[in-house]
Image 1: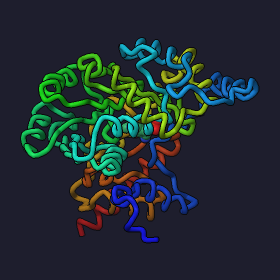
Image 2: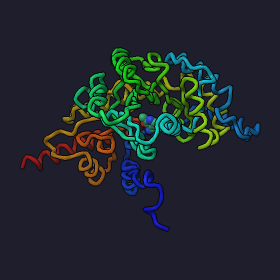
Image 3: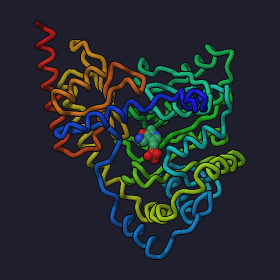
Image 4: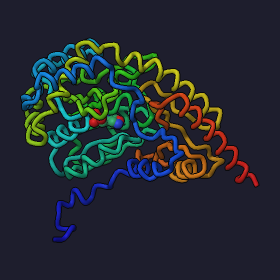
Length: 391
Ligand code: PMP
């Protein structure tokens, strides 16, 4: 058996550099990690109780592959009330986390050789999905426009690739890693160029509930016929390990996505679907409790990183701060995070795997103590290394 005879699309996927780095630094018993996008909140009690009830009442059979009807109806109402989604239950597929929602969507909408625009910096899953499905990726750097995608950038991506069939765009709003949350005007500005070029939008809105001082605005309202929205409970209800997500989209495309979903995973776990129905029926305020804490932490991290000499992208949402390493340190993102982990026992994410080697990402979905220790260490490191540079 030869490894190079298996599917080259899989061989071409780079293993996640972020997960590897996180794993490597975990061998240090003193490490404090602000690496992964993992809420440090517990799943709300009412959801846990529902899951236990699901076990006790033998909710243990195959669910319908689209997902429980009750859950899809609850999702229809919940997301309509929260963000103005217009999807009825029969336009919603319950997926195994947002990850499977994205994977099934990408696999369904595009064929090998199609091209998809990915604004960078970006969540690394997207590129892996493109490689797995032999889809060409057009990376569009947003660092010179405040990390906001503009209509001009979309048009330029199309014009610069006359040889490619540009079929899609992945939009992440609020964004991981930058924390940027698009305003209504910024979203509205994108719609005409997407419509004109017949570009599908996969709108990853997993952080939609976590915005600060501004409302989340979904592009699906403007381009209902060419948007697929993905969302889920990982962030809003701190349910990362329960693996529950959704795909929202118009007929007949959502029916095709449901097929891909069925023949990949059959359905999301029945117990989790039962608990998710509770989350969306009675958990409208669950995120608000966490959001209050996140907001305090965000301000703390932004202030401290600015004091330490970093240029900080204004984070209007999610739970990340994306910060530019001071030039005086003369370090790229890997050098910075490796030194910080080794000498100061603090784990942050390098910007490089997201597509920007001059930045680092801090997840503030962590305890106040962890954040305080991290900020102290960053300041100390900047002081120490600047001194070295000055010598
Ligand atoms: N999209 C983005 C932008 C994310 O940050 C994440 C999780 N880190 C996901 C999708 C995947 O979410 P899930 O855990 O629901 O699969």
